[in-house]
Length: 234
Image 1: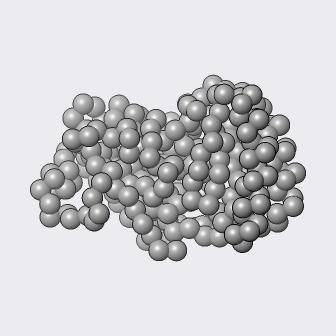
Image 2 (image 1 turned 90 degrees about the vertical axis):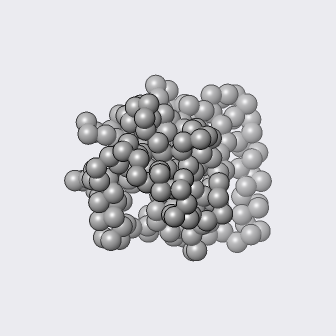
Image 3 (image 1 turned 45 degrees about the vertical axis):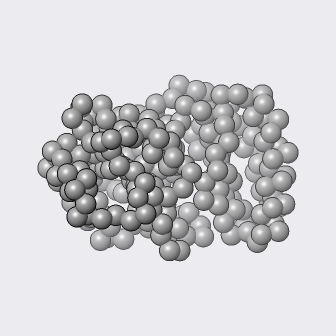
């Protein structure tokens, strides 16, 4: 990845002019800035217009890819919309026919872990335990450093044996968040989906800001696609 985006570079000019271009973008920390509480994030009207204009452009397929639940993406990018949505790191995707799951796991597999994490979270009011369809996330952005270290140590005591007994799940670190997700739910599935929609002549521009986006970057075509690491000031 390059340190900065030079739109006059021959490669970038060729990419932007390509007749079948897929644009994949993360949400938090990429398309929208972080907030202390995820529920406080809103999409400004100018961003909604930009998203719709880009998604409506001839030859462009825009996919918004996030670890957020699908209900949150519906809130941030309401209908009518032209962009495709991918939620829960690829576990859900939404096209013209609506939302569809990409996993066949029983959602109840995560229930026991969520219960333990919620009991632990009650002792840290500034932490938030988020239940998703097949995964659970521990948000600790608002905690002081000592409380954060203490919480994560206690989470590890709960999480390590649970993961040992549930090998189909994995630990995923994000920006001030730790998530337990199914191994099949990765943002790389979004890249595969968009490539299928575009066909063999398609090229991709992929934007993300943290470790949760590395799967998208890794799935990009080495010579024809381009990942962009985004850094936003909080």
